[in-house]
Image (cartoon, rainbow, N blue to C red; front, side, top):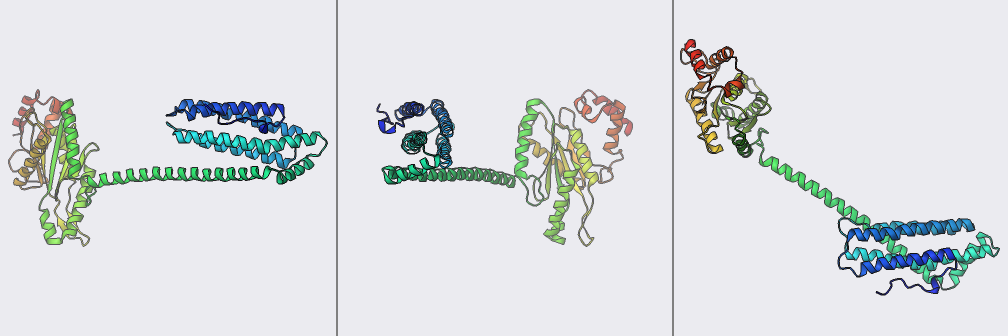
Length: 433
């Protein structure tokens, strides 16, 4: 392949150490150029290795030249200008040679072209000027005289062309720097736009799963969460329970006081439910005046405790004028996943039916059935808040508490061992009667 940089006598400075290093640089650049110009695809690692070899040797050469100028005591104006060209080259070459996971042929060839053109212009310009001034100083001129005489020589001979070329190279270099800065700015804008888009998508996702009025997760979120927890319960054999809650006589609030008061009741009720349940429970607004509480890894008895806490926390709601708008009554349906249920909708249906059973009992109570693995037992809420004490039997929670104390079982243990303790539980019930 034809060399990109063709050395000729015009490039010789007749400074042995300088010319030797120039020839070495020319050889490195030509080898680099042959690799790049003949390639169809650039190997980033191979490219980086050759590029670094050229730049490392260039830095050595620059250091030696600057030491030579200081040793010859050249005029500081030339030394500063010469050093500035060296620094400018390093910055430009490093910028052009930046690579990521890949590098395009165009980018690689741009670096090779820059190396060839810059070196030619630099040797014919400031390096030849340096050589002339060194010989002038060695011939007896002062560094200042040597610099001024060489400046006149450049202005009156063929050097104006090199001056123009250097000016053009500086302009191109500046333009390249501006383009790189613009590219970095565009990349930053794209990165920021991506972050903004991801944030917007996250906000949209939240909006799609969040109830606007109460701030609670909505029905869609409830369905997704229930599906995930259903799969978990089936996989690990853990219990899963639901509470379906309905605000009793809620329609009367809107009819008597207006929808604004109805909305205020919904928000207050959402806050109450959020504070009443456990951290692991998921509270969602399921419908107009319906809420759903998902109780992961919780048995029927554990979920009944949650329902009892909610009923105990409920209080009448008064508006800003102190008028009672709602009496604080809720019907709660309780259901636990059972072996005969094949999908989450079965559990939802059971909780919904239990909630309507509570309403049929007059509301302000809870109702539900234990699953078939632990026996079936109708329950209703505490006698303080409902018509649960419609029979002569003591309240369910009183019976349960006595049973647990007698048997030495906690609520959680009672769930897992309930089958074994069934007969003891029945004896307690009989004694309670």
